[in-house]
Structure formats: C-alpha cells, structure tokens
Amino acid sequence: MPALTRNKKKGAKLQTETPPLNRRTKSNTAPAKSHKPPLKKQRKGISYEKPEVVSNDDEEEEEEEEEEEEEVSEQSDEELGSDFSSEEEEDTEPLADDFLGGSDDEEEEGTLGSSDSDSDGSDLEKESKAIDEEREREERDAKDELQMNIKEQPDEFRLPTKKELEEEASGPPDLPALQTRIKEIVRILSNFKDLRPEGVKRKEFVEQLKADLASYYGYNEFLIGTLVEMFPPVELMELIEAFEKKRPTSIRTNTLKTRRRDLADVLLNRGVNLDPLSKWSKVGLVVYDSQVPIGATPEYLAGFYMLQSASSFLPVMALAPRENERVVDMAAAPGGKTTYVASLMKNTGIIYANEMKVPRLKSLTANLHRMGVTNTVVCNYDGRELPKVFGQNSVDRVLLDAPCSGTGVISKDESVKTSKSANDIRKFADLQKQLILAAIDLVDAESKTGGYIVYSTCSIMIPENEAVIDYALKKRDVKLVPCGLDFGQAGFTRFREHRFHPTLEKTRRFYPHVHNMDGFFVAKLKKMSNETKASEGDEPVETKEQAQLSSDDDEDDEPKQDTKVDENKRRTPISKPNNKGDKNKNTNVEGPRKQKKKRSQWKAEIAQAREDKRKVMRKNTKEPGRK
Image 1: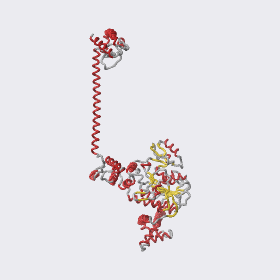
Image 2: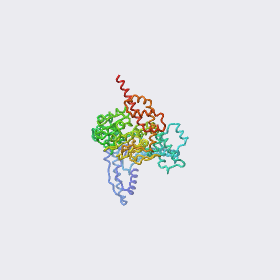
Image 3: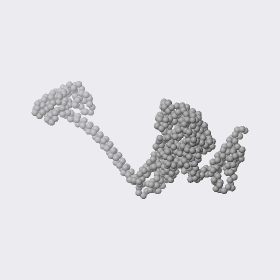
C-alpha cells in the first residue's frame, strides 16, 4: 500500500493548489513507444469523472471520496490483472492512467519515454548546432572575402600603369577586369568634375577607355575613336551594347495584294508570333518567333509581304510619293523600297529602279515580279550618269539610299568593326556627294506635286550624312524640309571644328539603343530652282575632290581614248570629238589655262570616255555571235 498513500498525499497537495482535471482509473501501461487504442476489457474498468471545483474548507470530504475511489480502482485492478499481464506480453498498450496519481509502473514507463525523447532532443540539438556552425562559417568566409576584395581594390579608382598594361598585353585579355575598368572609367567621365582624381587629365581616361573598348568589343582604333567623339560615355556604352544584339525581324505588308489585318490572321494560324510594328507604320509587322520559315511561306511566295528592316520604311515614308508621278530609285536592289513606293503609288505613274551592280539585278527583278509591281522600269547605270540618261529636270521625286560604310548595321555585319578606316569613309563621302548632286539635277523644281529628294544611309558617320547634305546646300538651290517622321533625333549642326547649316536639325537620326532599329540617317530636300549654285568660296573644295576623281578615271581611260575616238568619229557629235581633241592637243598650252579648261570639262570628258568604252564592248560582244 505505499503506492496508494503516496498517491493520496500527492492528490491532496494538488487539490489545494489547482483545481483537479479529469481523472482516469489506474492501470498498468506498456512503454510509450507505440500508441494503440485500449481494448474492450480495459474500457470496462475505466471510469471518468467531471472536474469539480474544490475549496479549502471541504478538504476532509474530498480525502474520503479519494479513498473510496482508490479502493474501487484496486478491486478493478485485481479483476483485470491477469488480462493486463497477458496483454503486456503481447506488446499491447492500454490507455495511460491518471498522470497526477500514477503507479510505480507509470514512473518506469515515464523514465523510458523520457530517455527516448531525450535522445531525440539531443539529435535535434546536434543538427541545429551543425547548421549554426556551418552558417557562421559561411558568414565568416564571406567577410574574409569581402575584406580581401577591399584590400585588393582601393577606394579610389586609378588608371593602370605602363608596366601593368604591358603585362596585360603579354597575356590573354582578362575580360572581367576589362569590364570592371570600363564601368569605372565611364562612371568617372560621366561626372568628371566631381569624381576627377588629382593629377589625372580627362584625356588619359578617354584614351584608356578607347583601348579597353577596342579590346573588349573588337573594334579598330579608328571606329571606336569616332564613336567616343560622337557620344557621351553613358550613351556610348548603350550604343555599343545594342550593336551586340540583333534587331527584331520585321515584315512589310504588300497593300497591292492584301491588308495587314488579314495577313496577320493567316500568319498567326501558321504558328507565327507577331505584333504590329509600331504606331508610325500602318503596314509593318514585327515577328518574335515562328514555327515555319518566315521567308518560305506560301504568303511570302505569293507576294503578300516583304522581309524588310524597320529602318528601311523611313526613307519611303519621308519621300511620300503620289499617284501618277515619275520617281527614280537610284540604288534600288534588292527592291524593298521600290516595291513600297509602288504600293503607295498604287501601280500608277512610273518608277525607274536603277541598280549599278549587275548581280543584284536578279533579286530586284524577282521581288518586283513576286510583289505584283507593274509600273517599274529596271535599268543598269551608274547613278552619277542618270541626269544624262533621263535628262535633267525630268522627274518629280528621287530616292537616294546611297552606298555607305554600314556603320549603323554592325549587328548584321560584325566585320564592319575592323574593316572600315578613315580612307574608306572619305571615299564613300566623295561618292555620295556626286550622287546627291545627280539626284538634285534629275528633279524638276517646277513639278506641281514633287520636286523632292530624299537622301538616306545606313551609316552613323557624320562625313557620310550631315557633311554631304551641307555640301548639297552649298552647290544647288535646295533647302531642307521636315521629313514627316514624328520620332528620331535631330541631326548634328556642329561637330568638333565643323559647322553645318542650321537647318540640318530637320534631318533625322535613328539609333539601335534608342529606337530598337538599325542606325539610319534620313534627310529630305526641296528643289527651289533648276539653276546650279556655286560660290567662289566653295569652288576649291569641289575642284579638289573632282580633280582627284577625274585623275583616277583618266588613268584608267586614257590608254583607250585615242583608239575609241578614231573608231567612233562618225557616230559621235562634232562637239564631243572636239572636246576630246582639245584634251589631247592641249599639251603645249600654258599651265593655268589647262587647269581652267579641265575644271569646266571634266564631267563631259569622263562621260564621253565611258560611253566610248561601252560602244566598243558592245561591238566586241556582238561580233563573236555573228560568226
């Protein structure tokens, strides 16, 4: 009975301190590892009591009631003892007895359960400690690495010394280090007044930036130097990064055969993901991806659309041709702009599509047939001779998409980064100046609806764009008019030591990092009169370039000129052989007189020599056929 007396004392103490909880009859329990429901025999001996509120005055009555309950529980234990023992052997588990008044078996079971819980708790503690230690170690390593980086990189950026540059040049380029240095130099140059290191000039940072950009992105020294001079540092980085990404694919709807909405529905059904190009175009669509080749669909072969970059829309939109006009496209291949002009004119009027290079005529004629263009004549002439072919002041509008260096389409042709030099830009600029003068001479200033010339290039070089337009303004009676495009940046009116006409702000420049299209330049000129304008101050510039071009042509043509003139004396007019004779006979004329005569007749002489060459070539090609 010692267990009963002990439980009795415990119960009395707990009753005085806290109200009793629901009590259960005492029973022997198995180790608390598995929890199974009690058996039916056990449930018979279990009695439940409702909780009672006990006061200090009724302690004696409560003790008597507890004694009675304990006697009842002892009797039930004796009756069910055999059953409990058998069930314990079979690893059964009865319901736990009252946790306030447990027996010795309950204490043993508590010790076993506590040992298991203690072992589980110790495992959890070990795991948590290991996690905490690993986290502390990672934080410690991160701090050490940060301190190491801080020690390696000083607070103030400094330019590399000559010795460090020599070491870099001796080994392969360290691209992460170059990128970091470029970012730091750009940051300092963008706010050089406040971030300027002591004793270092801006020129030193600019030179180092040029060298790093050329090494990192693969540009030659000339091109990267020109870009650095044209753009501020932050915008320069945006432009160069834009050149590294391809522009989105765009197509132009052929309004001669379909509408944009109908074309979009058909292509969407074929698995082409597309959207309208932009608000400024009513016929353009931008293609994101396609499950079929976009250049080989039945709609493409039927001439419903043309694969064309978004920047190529702009010159035609600026030209704005009208129906029943005479229009010349001086450099037409592969036909994207020509077919766009034809669709705007609704196949009325006449278009002269000229292309100088014979291999490109195939693609031009193929696209014209595919797109259903019927008002176009394809011709193969040097654009500088077109005023003599069609006659001066003979057309309403001229579109001149001049040959250029291609510095605006580096994303399409990365070879431009290293292949173009200052000499190449100079040659292109000389050719473009001659072409734009020929284009102006073609246009009739007295045209009721026209009299416009649109000049465009896919270059961002100033000598090929603003300098050419400024030259045309000085040489011909023309003026710049708005292009009719609502977006685009204004052209340069000054660049370094150059000062251009103030109206050049009406020209438009387009950049890949701003407008998400290829670099492009567009200018629109209005011819005011059919008279040529040449001031004395501008004459030396023209004669210098023309003398260089004429001398190059004369070197190629002079050995054949005498024979050609002799063979074709009867066919050519009298004035032209006299000019040629004057050129060949003027060996004894004084120097100044000869120079003056060459200035006034160099165009006629070159044209005559080329025409003679063509006649001889045609004659030679016909004679073998006759045989």
